[in-house]
Length: 220
Image (tube, rainbow, N blue to C red; front, side):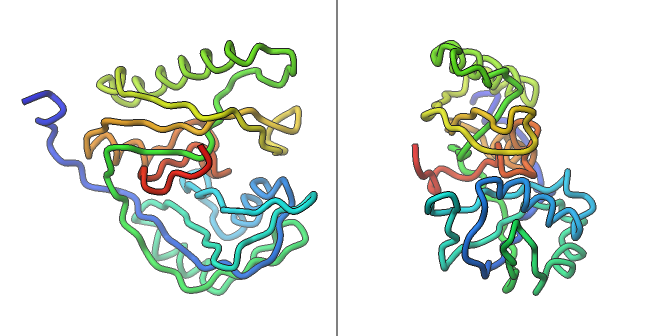
């Protein structure tokens, strides 16, 4: 029996709260706009992870699919209050009004393989002449350092980095960030739970570094 197999189970402290979304289109900086809109209803936004929205590019805007959902990962002790605060609320995201309806709660699934659509770390990648392989190697080294800081037993878990992406955000001094989709394999239930509850990187409230089970992987 390995050390990982001997882990006592850890009880979850967070739950996903899912809303149906009624709206049509969002600006490229929707992450900033959505975070600003949520801030009014969620004073503790820094403790909330905002799952990235599934949007369809259309010219300079992004279309919101008919079955779009807003999924928030919240501490248990905030969930009743925040559900009541957001239920049937309209969020002004850019020029669009998003209406939130039909809230339901989803427990976190402690899957052994997790994925995040895009993770941004504090790397100076705003120089277009920076060598891509160097940036990827530096990114992976910083990611492994963060994983080990969370749990030393994560030092050797398999990682896969997808194709580098650029996102527009006012949170960056240069107006955009480079990031990578990330897949992390071979996690124990406790490691999976800890990683999902903590998120990766410093901006989970912008939908960056939010981890979900492998079955929802898209776009790698």
